[in-house]
Length: 163
Image (cartoon, rainbow, N blue to C red; front, side, top):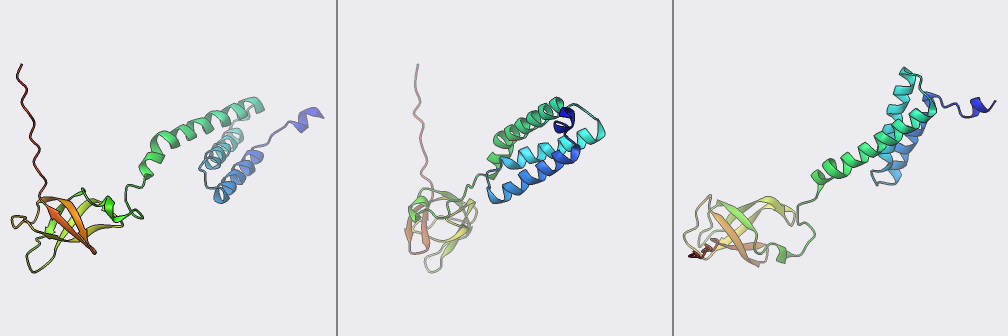
């Protein structure tokens, strides 16, 4: 009688796995997903190889820890939001971009950033430096309306230290 109470069938693990994944849809923490995935794998393993409940639980815990570690260490860092959308305009000042359309005295140019800045990777720009050409690296020095004022980056000199 006691043996039948503690008997866990593969479909129990499958239901547990899908329930945990369903919980993940309502509580987006990315924790329940990995426990649910591990439970589905334990369901498949226990269906193929009849193993004791202790081993099933140990496999489930081990896989859950491995999945959580992989999520935190390798997968989650790939999804970091590097844009500056939603931040104030002052975050643009000091950013470095590349000129794609040369700004002239009567027309605006265009500057492109490698990472979107405040929601866009290209911005209208003007320059008070006449020597800027297409392909040059520039630094944002000011903002006028929705236009950026750009200039060539200042060259840094490194002092030579004698021994």
